[in-house]
Image (tube, rainbow, N blue to C red; front, side, top):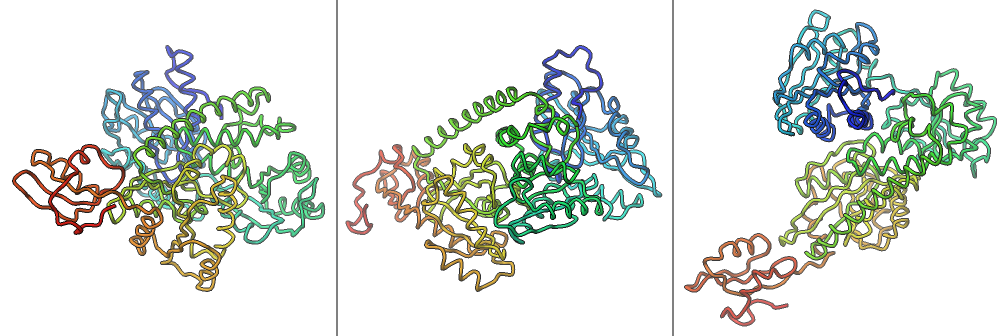
Length: 606
């Protein structure tokens, strides 16, 4: 990727051009048409520069071209990626209209057809805000792409994020003569071979990780060894067998299940003659693809740079190729072409920024502690259903998908327990076997939410045949975070799926604390879970007995909102109330605490 800015750049300053080039660092999830982050950046740049800004994204969600001017000024990359009359370019254009109207112009619709784009998105910007957005998708008539396409809108950012554009694109290419099997990710998946010296379970999980990164798994190779070979990780005979497999199957990538040393990586590259990565680089790649917030992107970049720094020797040729592919996303090749001093300086800069994030989180925690609102953290293996559980309990709208590492950035939502006691429920990144230590270190600011929580909900996929192994992997990470001794409730999720009763009984016997069975998808068992949370946190609150004046009806509403009213009587002087209230005593309510004339002994006191 050349990071060049195309189009009408005359009159733009150096800093403006550098800001535009920074757009290449943005990315969206491959299922999304566009993300709120990219929309926000494009709106801000449009307001500042008073010009139309256009970005082209490929089907992996990466920004591959940046242009200034209308959508017709940068046909550049899209035309170069045309794959014939039976395929689209695999790119979509997201651009702004500074006048405030998101209506697609004739130029926009002409570009959709001539570039054979997957989609054309127009963002109407005025006064630094997104006013409206419209989308055009290609349409096939009589076997050919039709003028204008189909338009949708006006739409909000949230509607853009949820817009199901991929199904429409698949249908267009099918009508153009392709079959669904010919196309899955916009570009042909990288053909990968998987290698492990661990176990079948670990190799199967590696396959799921590879598929999450967009690879097509051609073959799996398992060689059982007591320990990795110091020079080649696997035996020399197995290396020769692997080299033949690469040639015969046309593999482009070899993925090793364990982290390779720099020496092993160099030796294997010479023997195999094709690109290869290890499990750590694969997980880092998935994180780089999924990170959406600035904090998440910084954490992933820091982890990747720490991983790559000792591996720079001998990678000059590989790093000088400005190509893409699994294992190359994140900080970007152009950074890694610089010397070690530059990379160390970048690591120091990111570490300082994340330290600021850490201090900010500590301030937030202090405020929460002052308000005495307990914090409950969801932990568990990746894809155990933590985000689905958060949504079910709190009504949040966090992305919940059947994929590994769908959640990277922590999300905290308020949850009211049955006695109206509020708690803060935090969703965290999922754990996995052999989680790279670089990630644990880089995500320290995020994972401190686990360390500071009052209660952990360890969410387990009850339908998994490897529950015990997944629980052990989570326990190992909790030990690394020094959070393994925290009060924990084991939550067996996905009980609506087929389960193995014998395995469930084994899990129950192995866990010392309370175990609950739920289904976050159907809602089964959620009320019992709320009651268990309240029981574990021992939330009693405080007893209020007093007369609230009629002119302070706002306080009466607050009492009803935050507590359990046990008695209420309207008197000439005010409203006499007895209630069990959650949290610390509110001084506004405490002011009216006193002798109410209630029958002694009617209500238990603290």
